[in-house]
Image 1 (cartoon, one colour):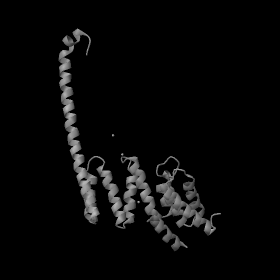
Image 2 (cartoon, helix red, strand yellow):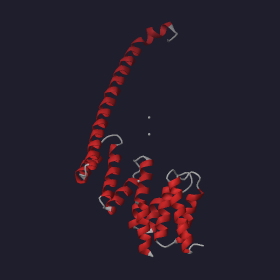
Image 3 (spheres, one colour):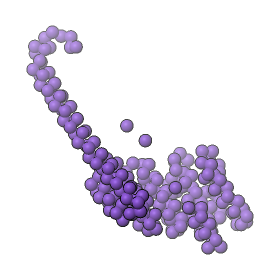
Image 4 (cartoon, helix red, strand yellow):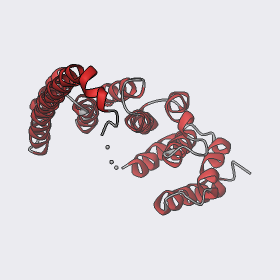
Length: 223
């Protein structure tokens, strides 16, 4: 039964930023002139910094695009090297994008352990945008469905499974599949029923949850 479950799970698992007083000028005119000069130079400095920062981000964007091109050409090791450089020397949002893409490439290469570690690191990185952290946790959970225990999947996904969480149904599906694989059909049924009961669940996720519920019902092990 375990082998059948593993095979079934693998099949299921195969996915935005005029002064009014006349004496004011006589008393404070020189101050106003100095202030105006400082404002002009300050604005110029801000403009120069913005231009410089924009150029750095643009250069990082070019590097990121180059890494994606390498990956598309199947040059995964070269792509990973380019992404690693971007992680340490990139600007703007590109370092975290590079980390996320590196983790994805590791998963595609079949190095599940390294991919899970990379996604877990992103999920725990408080400096990363929340959407990246949540997505990374879900990605780690889905990889752990095939390679880890229910407890490991739960550690990644359960925090994202409650109402109001944008990725709750992806998290619930991973939890349900992991419980099913572990032979805990009662727990699996609970997770899949939460998906079915959620009016906002995507149709494809709801369809897969219903298939799983039908399989569980047919097994007779989760009355």
